[in-house]
Image 1: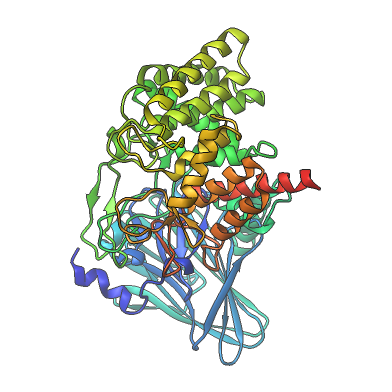
Image 2: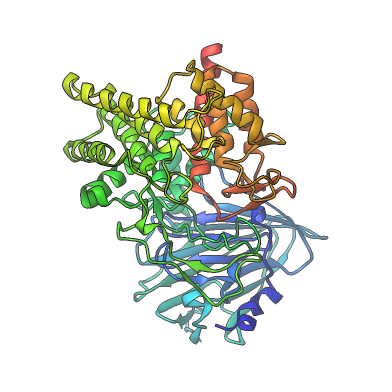
Length: 589
């Protein structure tokens, strides 16, 4: 696809900063919508399928509902849902547009719901629909209006049907309409997209009622937390990223740059086991919620299927990730459109340790079946075989003897031993003690804190997490000194960086890692430093826009999100931290 063709949609719907995008999702796919009602990202039928709306990355494909008058934007999620309400104020009135992907989610059919509401006076909105399958390479064809006023079309192998715009016009291959909604009334638009023949569509009221009910069922179990609204929203986002059957994608998008023009552009529309485990652990802090069982089911299935050949990530159906390729599209400004991921051949030892952490917790809660115990034995065997060998580690770098990976294994073995029969517990504890002793010999800095690896003496923010998971006591000098070193070396303006990539000042190589900010809050919580724990929690929690979504990195100087959106493991650690801090507050009271 040519560069100029890819940019044509941007003339009318240019990209926004990431903090202004809202996510709607149904577990099988997700869409991003900008502040002008411009729905610019959606993959059908599932997360890792080619996009049918790809204006976010410079492709053709947009579904916009925008006030005809000049306006200023606001919006919010309805509590406990991913139903987003745009709220625009014009010079003469106010207008809202309620957006959602319909629940229950159909495996083969995506249904986009958009309800326009005139709050005070008559309002007119402009509607544009331009579906472009295969990342915009296939334009709409066979566009026609049926006798009932419903529009149908095709784009590549995708069938398209739009309800609610009978007066639309075909302009340059796309549908456009102006719709006037009388004061106090509402108007529904329903867009259906599928690879298969479309069935009879239910009424919009039925779709909305089922969608509202689906969200109530999914999130009603969330209790009171520190920052209750954000904690509940984090759980809701994680649920929205999780497919029926359990696989949770790491993010909804691809190619959103971590650093402009630096080549760090990745496709995160896949199930990273680490992210899934973080979400599962967070969902079991208070009482086991459905996301916990989802996570346990996914890691057990992958271990039983792949054993020692376990990969760090999979497609939502458990198949291997496609290799990386680059599409000929402009990309989100500063980025490159990378599809697929290159980590298939990596081994990440820390992930195996984290698998043991969640399986050990499940066993302690009486929620691990026979297959789960088999998977636990496989994980222990992998650690026994590979803990002395280099791995890629949590940050997916070149192979090294990463300290964090070994400590994650110590934490996992310790957790598993706590619920094991005495004979088996002795074996797990002995292995954990051996790994810890050798890691101390090879990776303890002369100052008494952990260093990244035997050859890299700097500190790494990830090293504060294994003690929280049980690798070391809070009062261990190695734990305390490492926490102090991270604060001294990796902190800037209250935000935490994962490590120092070079001698340049923090922030010049990459943004602050929001995951690490919540790690620091948990580390101080473990120490009983309640003020410091809340300080890191609140500082990190502030790094989002109006929709309350977090990317992987945060540009502290420019106050901008960087990387794919929304990043699952950041929301997972937010949820866990909110629960830990709430429990600590209750104990102090």
